[in-house]
Every structure is written in C-alpha cells, then in structure tokens.
Length: 88
Image (cartoon, rainbow, N blue to C red; front, side, top):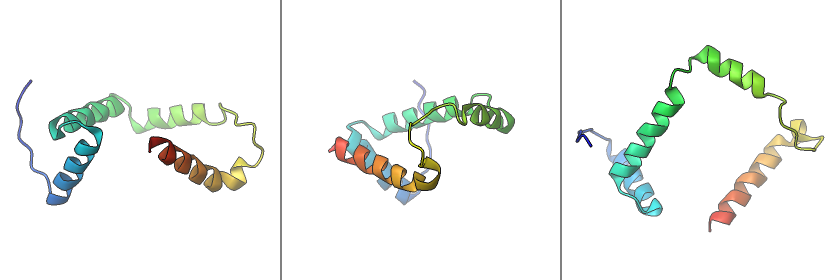
C-alpha cells in the first residue's frame, strides 16, 4: 500500500470516525472502500452513457402494482422503514 495524506474538515472526520466504528472498520479502510466505489462509478461513464443506461432500464422491471406512479413516495418510505428495522 501507498501511504498518502489528506486533509478533512472536522465534520468529515467526526462522521468518518462514527461510521467506521459502527461498521467495525478503520477510517483508512472506510476511505479505501469509498475511493474504490468512486472509481467504479466513474470508470469511463460519461453523462451520455449514464443517460442511455437509465433510459434502457426505465420500465424494465415490474412490481405488479398499478399505483406506483401515484403512490411512489409511500412505497419508498415503507421500503426505507423496512430496511432500517431489519438492520436492528
């Protein structure tokens, strides 16, 4: 590994330390994971390609529900609530 030095705001540092403690990893590991994620998400995809992929995915999946366009906020709220309660 290559040692590197970065400067963080106090808020960034506090948030990273808290998140690292909750996940049981070091701040350095959390930063490495974040850099890997950023590199993967930025790997050669320009805005045009991202837009093309989003359009290709639109309408591809079916929920079986007929009211998603109207009640999407309710479904999203419920999904987030369910995922939070399953983590506890």
